[in-house]
Amino acid sequence: MFTDADAAALYDLLNPWDPTRHPSDAFFNELVMAADAVLDVGCGTGSMLHQARELGHRGRLVGLDPDLAALDRARRRTDIEWVAGVAADAAWDREFDLATMASNAFQCLVSDEELSTSLAAIRRALRDGGRFVFDTRNPRVHAWEEWNPSNATEVVDGAGRTLRVAHHVESLVGGVVTFTETTSADDGAVLRVDRASLRFLDVPTLGMFLNEAGFEVEAHYGGWRHEPVSDASRSIVTIARRV
Ligand SMILES: C[S@@+](CC[C@H](N)C(=O)[O-])C[C@H]1O[C@@H](n2cnc3c(N)ncnc32)[C@H](O)[C@@H]1O
Image 1 (tube, rainbow, N blue to C red):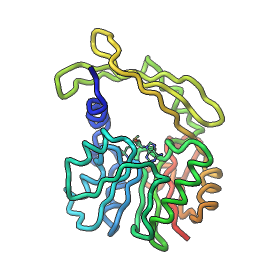
Image 2 (cartoon, rainbow, N blue to C red):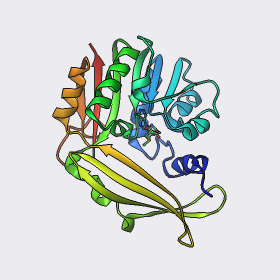
Image 3 (tube, rainbow, N blue to C red):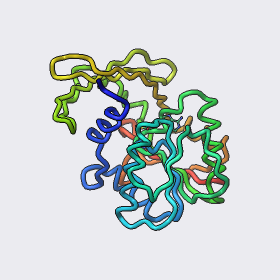
C-alpha cells in the first residue's frame, strides 16, 4: 500500500527545500522574502512558503496546487493560504507583487492553450509591474536522457522502508516528454506507477508565450547566480514583469 500521502512525503524526502545545498532554493527564498504578497503556483507540499514564514516573512503567502495530497502536507502550516487548483484557475485580481513556479512546475503546463490560459490568470493575479519568476529545464541539455532505470534513486522513508524510484521515458513528441515514475519496495514489488508529461521550451518560445500573455521578459538566466543562458545551461530561469 503506497498512498498519495506517502507519495507526497516521498517527494519531500527526495526534494528537501534547502538553500544551503541548492542555489535554486536560495534564489527563490531571496525573491520571496523581498516581496510583500506572494502567489506560489504549483506549490506542491508548500516547502518554499513554509520556509518563508520560518525566515520571518510577515506578508501574504498563498500556495496553489491541484495535488490534494501535496496540499494536505502544505496545510501543516495554517498561517499560509492554501488553494486547490491549477494555474489557469487562479482567480485573484491584482493582489500579488510576486508569482512563482519553482522546481520546474512550469513544465507541467503542456498544451499551448494551458500555457496561455495559465499565464493570463497569473498575470491577472499580479499587481501592475508585479513579477512572475520560474525555472524550466533547458531543452538543449536533453535532461530526459538521464531519466532511465539505471539512474534509479534509493531512499529510506519515514516508516523505515527502503524505496527505489525509477524513471522511464515513454515518448518525446514536439518538446513534450512523457515518462513514468515507478516506486518499488526493496524486494522489487512495484508500489506505485505515476505517469506525467513535461514540456521543454526554449528561450524564444518562452518569450513568445509571455509576450502574448502581457508580460515583458526582464531576464533569462542560465543559472542561479545570474549566469547567461548557454546551450550547456541545465536551467532557464525567467523573470517576467506584468505590463
Ligand atoms: C515538481 S513539483 C514542484 C512543487 C514545488 N513548487 C516545489 O518547489 O517543490 C510540480 C508541481 O506542479 C503541480 N502542477 C501540475 N500541474 C499544474 C498546473 N496546471 N497548475 C499548477 N500546478 C500544477 C504539481 O501538482 C506539482 O505539485
